[in-house]
Image (cartoon, rainbow over all chains, first blue to last red; front, side, top):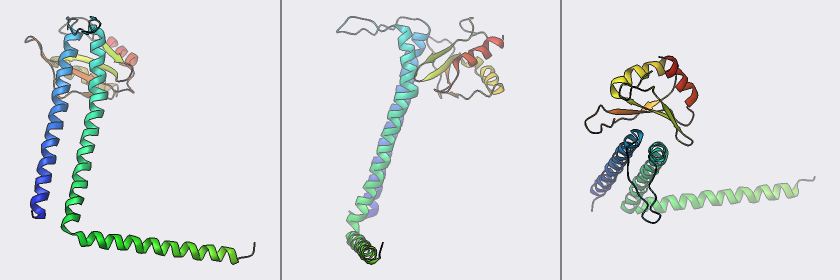
Length: 134
Length: 80
């Protein structure tokens, strides 16, 4: 497939996942705010731990909702979106290098040349310092 | 300041990690934000407010972990 088509496909996939991440963040926040509102009104929420039979206290639930929305949910959404950015950049680089592999070889040769020059400098400096009297 | 829905004073709640927050009816949001602006209190309001059983929607004002719950509560108590 041609590079522009591949790039457009990649962009479409990333945008779809970005939309999903945004919807997940908004809908999860809204759901927790509903729970928080119910708890704030001191209404019974009725979340029961099936193992212990204990019910989550409304007051605890209200504070949990605030923490989950403003701290944990926000952080996890940010991490998810950062991952998408990473996928976009690496995906783009992979497609570009697959389409133009010669540039990869040229880049490799350039890095090798730079490293060799650096090694040469180190060797010269080492010989200079060993010949200089203390 | 009185909560128009509960007819009780506005109560600033706080969580150790998330910091203080205030749940306020949408109708009072402008008035509350005015008070906060006057005292240079930093905050942000959720983009959506929740309405249960057809009652007026409630918005959440977040003050962040640096928010001072006692100071904010005092501002609303003194606002009458």
